[in-house]
Length: 317
Image: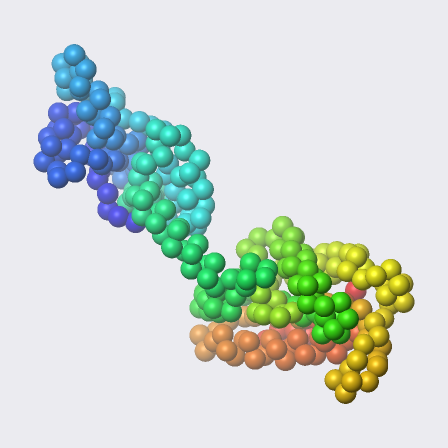
């Protein structure tokens, strides 16, 4: 955000023209103010167009800026996510696509965001995000996951993390090959993003491990939805014979033939109540322990614990 150029609504056009002529650049957006609130914008180009007609100066030079301003402008609160501001900026008409975005704080003027600054930032952000994403699923990878967890911990607001692991995924890969295994991973990454949940973040740690962050009151219905969709659809990744039999026959680590169950999901729900002493490494280690306990339960399940041991509960599908 930048300070921008502001003018009062009762200022006269002639005074604004003097200001424009005194500047090195004649391509500016001026924010028209009434007290501390923005009420419109005036583009330098509009001034030249209005005054450049045959009687333009005579008719408009003494007018107040409120009479010639454009009241249709994009204004966003300073708390607006950058992606939301970018979408709104791109949705504008061609005439206003390059106008500065006016930023307010509880309705009061705070500054402007030049559109070229916004789009430059978004481009750099998307390139960086793509570099940090898992190449198979497109989900944010470890660096981005760490950033999100660190930000949530530092906010000191309770949140919930779900550590999802695919049980018996290695035996599936051994029998069906990595191509089909990749298809399973992409399918599950889609299931984890499918529910319409506020403040949802899904990341791919690597392999068959995923992380979800969401609000504390959402995880049970979220897990129930994901497990239900998973159990209903997983048979499509098997032959009819294997799906009907309910087991796979494959070599174990000792190269002995062994029966393995079909893939299932272990979803370890970790309720986190951040403190100033808590850090990402601590959360990761404790979450891994909870996931290990979840994997000891057969079938697709969710298992819930709180990091400060305020409660613990187990649920199976």
